Length: 86
Image (cartoon, rainbow, N blue to C red; front, top):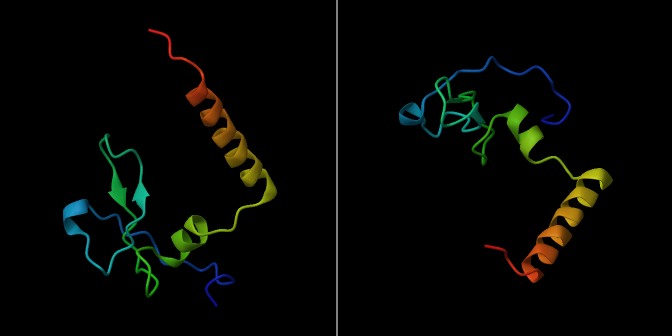
């Protein structure tokens, strides 16, 4: 089962120009810096990511995450109402 199996295949560092539908497209590192690559593991059918990155990328939000998102949205709304200074 996808969610219970934690035996992941080794990462297969892949450059952008080498990516195919047979590679996990999870970015690793800073795209603007040397050493950036994509995970490259075998993706889960119907996804662009491997099992590990599906778990990370599509996890459900907990209450703490939701509170942070709501607070951030509230702050952006408030900033939008305030006049900008030169």
